[in-house]
Length: 345
Image 1 (cartoon, helix red, strand yellow):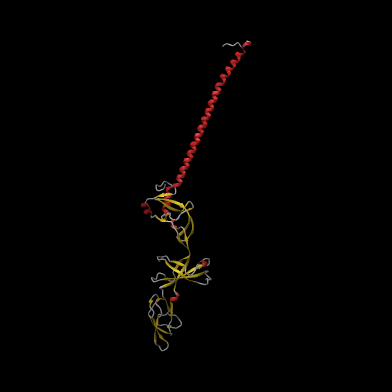
Image 2: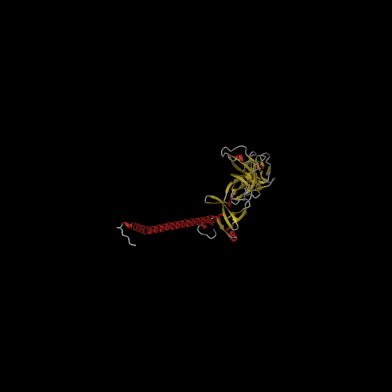
């Protein structure tokens, strides 16, 4: 249709042209807006997808890390490997814990069985039959002295069975009756004199059990305290606790230094394990528990202890199987497992 813009009758026609022009201009703009809107939605969807994927990946990493944490403290060993490494398994349970103190001591002669033999009359020694280290029996002749009165010889005899520790008599000398010629001791028993420090005195009592150790190939011996001195030595500031030990074999020699482990308290505990079962990992005390050939490091809380045993307050329940010997091998396996060792999960 042709419009004459100079004519007054062409006004409707002018309106129609302007309307067509506006439509032509608006359509591309609107189309571009819709495209941009759809693009924004697409970008938003993609961003959300990335976030979701990232969240899933993070959850997966956390799951993997959690699974790793669950297994990084577990070691798997076969029965053959357990035997090879000397690993022993025991069942956790109650026991009697002995609270102990360790004190120094010394072997001494049993002075209740010590004899000082002196001549009855002064005179000249005409015969000496026994010497230091000789074993003598009661009534056996030790020496012969010729009395100054009447020049009559008489015999000096032992009054006990024992070993000659000292001899103060030589052939031909004049010996008086107020000087001991022989010192004889029955060494079938000896005294163990233990030094008890002031801080330990309130805990030590007659009748308590003691383990005596000398080392150097001498087996430990068990005894009980039979005497505690009523006073404290002014130089050492210790009291003496005495243990009488049998000494048939002669291994406890007077003068030998020893150690005494005194049980000052006995108490029942719910779970008692040997100290060999305890290992330290990441500043924690752990016990390896047996889970059907898998050994897991279980943190535990330790209570009272002595030289060889420990009370477990928490972390190990009665009836659980745990490694009592060889835990250090499992610890080493875990440390190796951090670098990919096949025994560790």
